[in-house]
Length: 194
Image 1: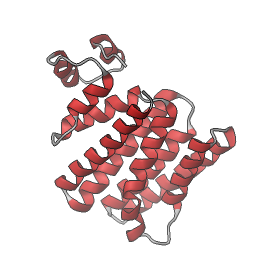
Image 2: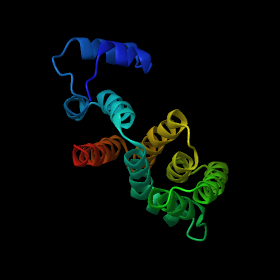
Image 3: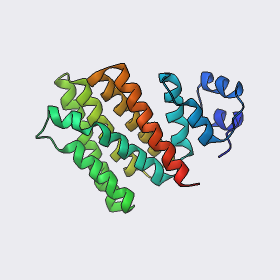
Image 4: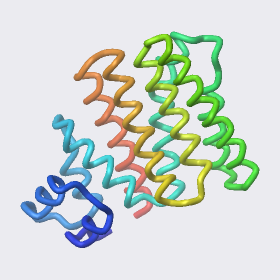
């Protein structure tokens, strides 16, 4: 997909990201995503923003699910009896396989339950578990809604929650590692469609 200054403005890209774009030579979205990836947390955030916006529905659902799965163990280690985040991910996976009104309704309910698990973990002041459950809730939320803007925002949120869970559990290096792992997966999803 060709990225232009006008496209970035239309999608409400941040000013700093637009400025970076104008000072480089790439215009292919996939190549720009690859160029942004690395050890710079801000550019990883920009890459996340961009790749989700150039993905199709199945791709960004798969991306959100992958992100949530990466940190599910953080929640389950702290709350082994609470399966709400796992059920939310499974509901999102069902939507990925079978995009029906019933599957979306189930994903919506499971996503709400996972977000409730995140709230319960927040009361317990366990940030990594909150973010892990939030990632699961966001993945289910992405699957539950038909409106592309809301679904894509939920997919971005799933990735950011996974990054935050990694950071809360193990610090900056773990967060950057998680960012790169998720972005690599997103790039592979985009490359598979070409």
